Length: 152
Image (cartoon, rainbow, N blue to C red):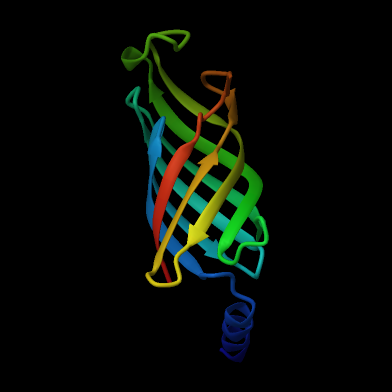
């Protein structure tokens, strides 16, 4: 129990502009996102996604955050992780077949975000390209997403 308390205090002392953020993104996919910082620069982000072509996906990403343009509360970040999901081929003309696909692959992410001082809100944009190894085996450029989070 004492170790948990020490870790919580250490994490709070080294915190970024926020410790945890929960929100939504919009773009080629619509995501529910949760991001949690382990220290001043390292975070884990989990995404639950739906796609325009009736797919569903979950992703986990490790991210490194740094100050952008010497602006307080403006951060840029990069990282990577993996995804697994299910895509419905009947709802897209660009998939190789009209079959349903279980997909698995790797993701990259690069983005920028701003955390407001006056309100517990964080906004940003990112690009998350991915490569499927299983299922529809292609490289996909995410074309970017807009994100808004409640931060605490």
